[in-house]
Length: 514
Image (cartoon, rainbow, N blue to C red; front, side, top):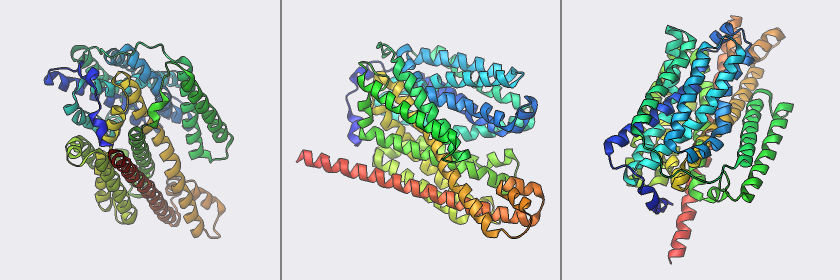
């Protein structure tokens, strides 16, 4: 499988820059733009209460303010990636950053819920154009011997940027105001825009094919419906009308998308790409890693805040060591890959991530505290960072250079869908074990008290009943362990899949050679 790096890309090499200094600026501009997009995803999670009061909104309405950005971003990634291929990576980045900045300025000044929802949706549309283009700019401008390192730095920002964004957002909320959360992405976007205009060249590989509007429509319908379905499953279960209906629409949309792409002369996504074993392995790795990471974050923040009684700023600070080692490992991935190969590096990263989660599952308790978890968090961060960069590299190498916007969109979409599914699965495992543990402690006391504890650990703490708080903490830890072990099991299956794919690939290569 590693021989895919030897693919002939002479048509791509012709467009590469000759100046190493200019390539540094290109990488900086792309990573700053990516950081702006990621900061806008994670930032508002730390300011939900303040937004609810300022905009006179319910908790459900605030939920949509936070999540409509990510939903519109994910739904439009594939179509916007194709748009980026057609207008050129530089122009796509410029248009996207201008629209993104405008949307965040509107969000900053939004006087009511409806304008805020409009601005957040518009911001997600712009981000869907910016995010895939940031990777396409790198793959289309860096020569083969430098591309692995550049992609490693890009994935470092993609992996650790969300945590850093949450830390900066929590700091802004504590020190200034929640509205300043929209200023940070604008500043980053303006910096990236200045670099893009001055340093990034126009792409010579822009696709001239007509745009597949029908394919784009069905791609949006299928992804949007699937994300809504997964979110509904996490909140209301598999059998709720919203879960069943959204999943059904998603399945129908996917079937229609496949049918459209198989018949189209110039499809949005050539289905033959999806039969590439290398691309599938890279996409599966990112899908699982980001899914497990999102599922773990669902339980790790309540642990810091409700079990250890930490503030939001302190809780996000606790994740910074993991973010730093993840970014460092991702940046060093190219050196390790050159020594042991892409596939072995990915497998090693997945193994380390699984061991880190297993350590966290075994060491967590409400007496042990943060330091008992830190070794597992660091191992998890290093493993995730190691696996991300070569997985992204495999995806970009598997698709022709003139369609790197689509390649980048596939890379980003697997992350978004993995995140949605990971939250659904691991949060579901946690909730099931939490309620089971609570039921095991239940006695003949007031049913209202037990109803309170079943609502979650935060509600138990508000009740001020020490016995209930103790039971809630014990049950929370039980749920934590179950969700961590579920993550370990998922990573173990991914590890076996990677090894099996490599073994089969080597077997057939040797057989054909003989």
